[in-house]
Amino acid sequence: MRLAGVEMVHVPYKGGGPSVQSVLAGDTQLAFATPPSVLPLVQAGRLRALAVTSRDAHAARARRARAWPKRACPTTRFRSGTASSSRAGTPADAVKKLFAATEQVLRLPEIAKTLAREGTETSSSASPEDFGAFLRSGRETVAAPGAGVGRQGGLE
Image (cartoon, rainbow, N blue to C red; front, side, top):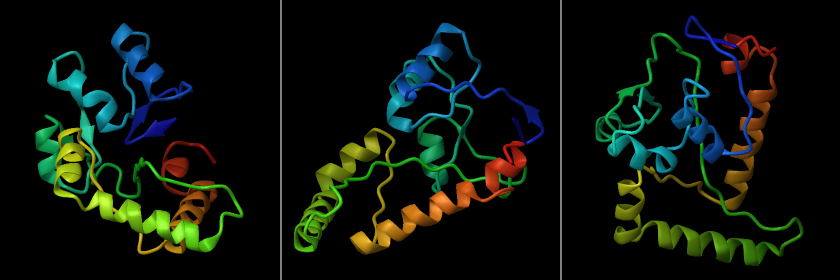
């Protein structure tokens, strides 16, 4: 894989934990990881954060890292997230109730403060349908030949 002029070999792991452990053990040189999984290690000096793909430059400084170099990789975007979901066929009114309750909790100041301390940025969709459209668009972007990281990374 080639990204920003750097040759890399993709090493697949079954989750962020094992990939971070591999970096700590010196088996691999870097990992793309979520802030909550590495922030305590960065703060303890066990890992060095190289770049943050955050929308917020302040978040990058708080994590002791530079912002992702947009000039070097202008079309590359990295996202990670956590979503709540339910089984297909869940009644629409139940989905809407769960969505509204989740939105209400995410707006609580103490929740936002806790998530920010972990390095997590919150954002939400306008509706469950909007979130479904977002997921479909992301899948299409990743699957499109020559798109984003795929194109730059030689993953066509």
